[in-house]
Amino acid sequence: MISFMQLRIPNVKLAFLSRTSRVPLYRIVLSLPQKVFFCAAKYSESEVDGSFSLRLVPPTLVAAEKEEAKAVLTLFLKKQGLSNALAARAINRSESFIDHLVSRLHSVHKSRYLVGRELTTLEIRDALIPYLEALHEEYGSILVDVVESFPNPPVVEKIEETVEKVPIPVTPASPPSAVLDSKKLKALARVTDIGPTGKLPPHILYLVELGMDIERIRVITRKFPAFAYYSLEGKIKPVVEFLLDLGVPRSQIPIILSKRPQLCGISLSDNLIPTMTFLEELGVDKEQWAKVIYRFPALLTYSRPKLRATVDFLYEMGLSAECVSKVLTRCPNIISYSVEDKLRPATEYFRSMGVDVGVLLYRCPQTFGLSIEANIKPATEFFKDKGFSMTEIATMVSRYGALYTFSLAKLVLKWEFFLTMGYPRAELVKFPQYFGYSLEERIKPRFAIMTDKGVRLLLNQMLSLSEDGFNKALKRKLQKLIDN
Image 1: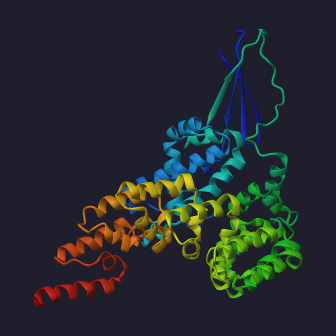
Image 2: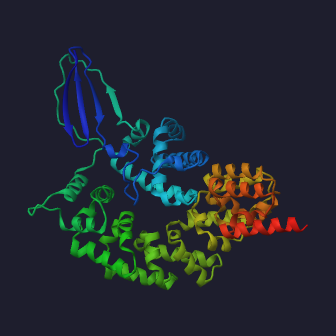
Image 3: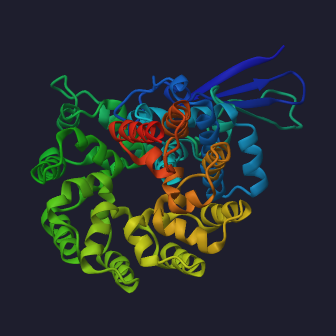
């Protein structure tokens, strides 16, 4: 007969099993928050809930995004120290979790899918990495078990032999690394503690009034425990009012604080305002601060040497002061790219292809945040395998800088459909923007309409014109056929 003695500690249930035999057993049963294992949960960085139906997304796109989610998860696991083999094994065992990541992606970017716009590789990565980091922060070394066991809490069993013939008594055990340490536990408790007045702490009430629910505040606190101790009048409120004065919509404040809660811990007079002045001197459009901060709130937390190094690199690449200003305003997260590890290697690669790097940096700086080995080189090889010369590929990249920000899976799907359309390959060199349009929402429907009318438009006419312009172009073509 097996008897169970249980000891509860936060988030963990230790079940000690003893027998009259010489082999006592114990196992650790992780009691993980149910919200992590419920795809329709309200996500911490999204303003929409998870009820967005996968049925609204074409199966081919879902399949492509699953491959992207696998790639993101693989890279993340490798960064945590897993070998290629262990990461690959974890991915093969994590089909349900991959589906969960895709579901989360659709919830976070629901509005994009409803209008038929597909996400780039960078957008997918930016949506999933913070979520994976939050899970890793909470579950530490058992993250792989969480991923593989999804949607069920993992059970890690361990069997040990002993010469003792009597059950081992239960003794207090130190929580494993998966359990939040005491500092985080205290911070989390502070978020929901009811004071003598019967209310939540003033700074928490203030944040709730701004539109942040308690769960979102808890997620921020798990990632950054100091946030729970920021005073309302001395830290949080001054920063929020400062952002509102800059023109940041009230509805965006929760998102900004979720992305970078450290902003509330930075002195306005000593750090934030001087950093903004410095960035304005470097080229950031002061009339666009609301948009810049919403896009990349971490910009205000970088050191001046780091800011200067990136701007100096942009000038080195031949960008004018006006172009530098526009790059920093449109894509402030370029500051986060390491000059020596990201920007310079990407520059050398694109130059070797014959691409005008200055033009590419201006048109699509996000491209320089991609991995050369994982994203850029595979895309180049893909086009070479399809018969494009290096000169043609360079032309396509120069004309459409975002070309390499799409996953290989999406490029393949659109290439395969292109082959059925009867256009010469040269049309793609002239109009590589083809790869940026939604296959199901734009390309296929318009091609079907055009084919049904018995006319043929240039590829760019078929896709880039507005609905009204497209219909007018079809009528003109039909009229020419009639006149002839």
